[in-house]
Length: 237
Image (cartoon, rainbow, N blue to C red; front, side, top):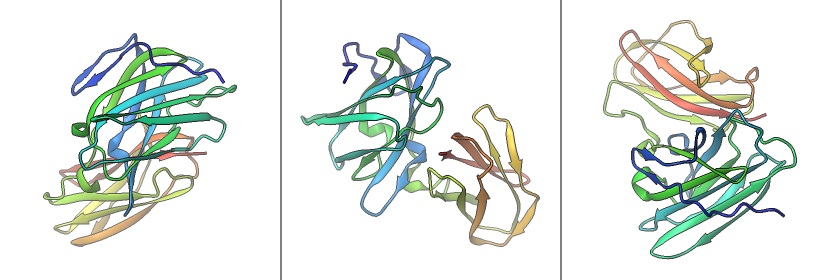
């Protein structure tokens, strides 16, 4: 097995990215975490216009209140290995390769911890595509999985995530509102949008039909007359 060892440091510091190839990026999507009672996991994917056959990364985190659990493979064709080196600041090392081209802009794995991981818990990160250092993008967590909970409208969850055919978007309202729901690709192109509908105060759920979408990451928006909330969902085929 050919492994791509981490020789060149491309460390992530809040607001700063250092890399050899800024056109290629590995994304740690903490905002799109799947929250469960005993663990939290977030997807990792990459953006590149090259043919990619190997993806590697390392993630160093503060162990205070957190413990690494595992890395769950989403793309079955990947050959995956990972290990954890424990110290005062613990590092998770991940390597993967495939004889076929690895899908771009598609969640490859879920990185699982004992609790929700946020950028404040991350000390450094490095990523490599085909053995070359690339930029790292870390999308910060949404605390407790709730967006702007103190405001008039909030998206409280989207499940399952990643999804294949259908997903449920959960939200809450403080006042009666007329809402539309839409799904967009990462370029902002609208895939579909619902007709406006009126909702009373309280907690609600709408079902999203994702069966016609290709694998990738999409933005889901909840829009009223004067406010828009958004979250991300990953679609896997």
